[in-house]
Length: 74
Image (cartoon, rainbow, N blue to C red; front, top):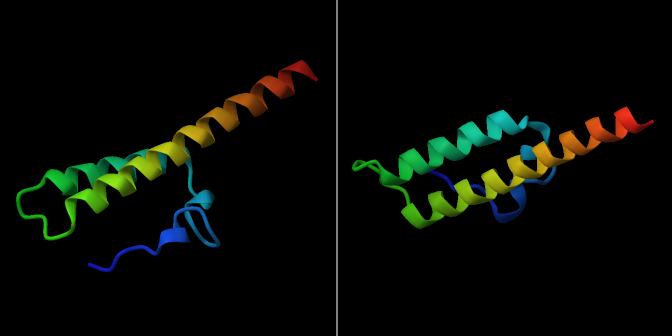
């Protein structure tokens, strides 16, 4: 399986265009794939990818909450 290039998670046409729930789902899928006995991919790479996707999803959630709070204040 081809690996995603280093800058592709949040670059042009990257993961910034997806919702946080989609990113959390992909992170869960990567974690599940990493522990699957038939996995042929690098386990450490999959876990690092899952961590990066989770971090991006959490940042999107935090940003969304901040925007909601700001809209209530104004």
